[in-house]
Image 1 (tube, rainbow, N blue to C red):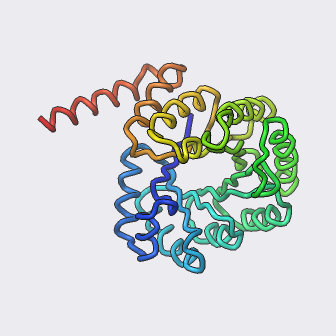
Image 2: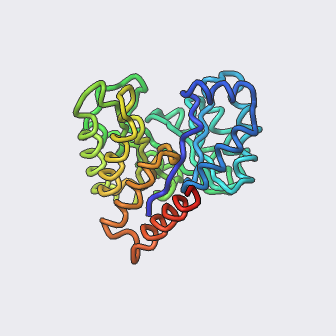
Length: 272
């Protein structure tokens, strides 16, 4: 079954970043509640632009998000931030994204080993964050080395989330195809390892982003993507998710599809 991660608390959004800078906890609370109500199981927290306030912000927000019933996905390039997030969180969580750098991998693995809870690590399948020359065979080689390194350090397969990396179509019209082919290779070579992708990255810089995200979501789910990062508040995304799962036989007796349709009908009736 797929796992949905809501990313509307994205510090790349100026409004959200402003609320984070002001430590507007009530805004974070409302956004978290809305995302949970729309199907998110994890809430992405990315506070990197806060710089020296990144870790104080997470210290305040992670417990609150968990109290609301969500699990957290903490994204940062700062290893110290990810290590502290592992220490703060009370429940199962995800940390990332971490490119294949053995020094960083070693530090995260030590923190995970010391934690009594389940920690998933997002393994970004490239070695240099500046490397945008990504193609399926190259990503597969990095993934093979990455998985081996994590297993050698005591991380189990169920804790690894391989990220095939989604790049914007605006930069190259074949980036969507590249991701899907890479995903196919990962599912074939690592059947016991889960995959993750931030689907909203594909449409960055383009008009009508919701349309591309919805169709991309259907393709990614049908190819077996396990953890999906997107804006769950987008109605077209909700429809694409429930419809695709029904079509590919992952909605037993169409329970979720029929429930979704009933809820939509009831919502319309309340508006009349």
